[in-house]
Amino acid sequence: MRYASLPFNHNEPGWPAGGHAYAPQPALRGDITADWVIVGAGFAGVAFARRLAEIKPELKIVIVDAFTTRESASARNSGFVIGLPHNIGSSTAELKKAHAYRNLLQEGIRQLEQEISQHNLQCDWQKVGKYHCQAERGNDRILNEYSRHLDLMGEPWTLAYSDELYHKLGTRFYSKGIFTPGCVLVNPAQLIAGLHHHLPENVQRFENTPVLGIRTGSLAEVVTPFGTIRTAQVMLATNALSPELRPGLARQAAMATFASITEPLTDAQLATLPPMQSWGVTPVNAIAGATFRFTSDRRFLIRQHVIPALRGQVTAAQTHQATQHHQRLFSKLYPTLKSVKITHTWSGTLSVTRNGAPQWGALNRFICTAGGCNGAGVSKQTVAGSLLADFMLKQDNPHLADMLSLGQASFMPPSPVLDIGIALSLMKERFLGRKEK
Image (cartoon, rainbow, N blue to C red):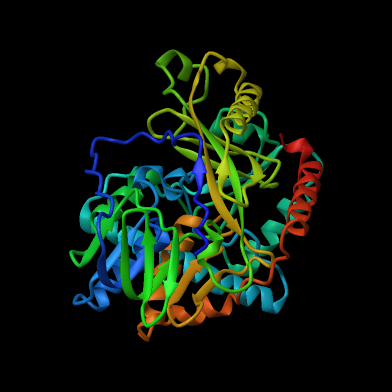
């Protein structure tokens, strides 16, 4: 058997753990059986496990992850719970798909709010919306197109110029931005840890249990370093990581993006800025520009710098380079805060597909998957996971039509053609967005 590659980030996420630390789960030791095995304890895997257990409480469900919940890809998220599609389009077909996508994202938010309320999860969940900003002056093409698309969907938005943005964000870096209220900001590490901890009783959880391969015969055998799980069905919630576990054509590629978080601002440092509440900013160019957040505990988060990570591996040198990028950018946006230190820089892996559609559904009679997040991980993967459980157990759900309308991820060429294509695409976006950094 060919062993699957394992992701490895040579860094650790810096989100504050908060006042409630959940006990870690054991690693699998020995051979066991299950009705379902879920590989990956992120937002998609946890949502699938929860919904599966709700529909069939008699099932024995096992969820495994290569790391602890706090180290997972979901805990490395920047914490934007998006309620609107990034790109809407103006044709009838694109607009119809955008409405379906919006329905799905908002259903994902609704499901998360229900879990947070039911279990009193402490995760700094804040409905504050977000700003979509540009730094370049005079070139308003992207923001004008975005506003037209929002109008077509009947979504509320307001335009803010430099002076107003300064009073909201504390920086004069941006020339213009569009505010939309349909976004939630959250501490993703606390959120995924709480969701994982409060899974139903018929879900057995194992951490630090990487899956090395899946053998199939009369049943599937999920092979881990110290035990094998025999099961009738497997759900892969690994996105583009460990591609050896996904049979069929390659349809996803792994990219790594980097985030840094600062120490909390002191009263004196905060006094150099206008009074601010929590806020989030996304850039008009997602590759060259930077995502920024100001958190309720007075920290800044910076996410910028995207690199290919086709094997899910990120080195210490790459993390160091990202820290330097972030420190220079932070000093440029906030010159009065040059004494503020970055405490952590970490990488997170996201899955991209060639046509923007997910890889979702059954791969063969043993394996199904919910992948292809394309950078909208929290709400999108939550609803993708829960709907996949409905789909596999043949439950009626009106949102299944929305999910199926998104289509399926298209074929990606193998390396080295894929590597060259990704490199050229990143170079193009960095050139186009060079004035945004």
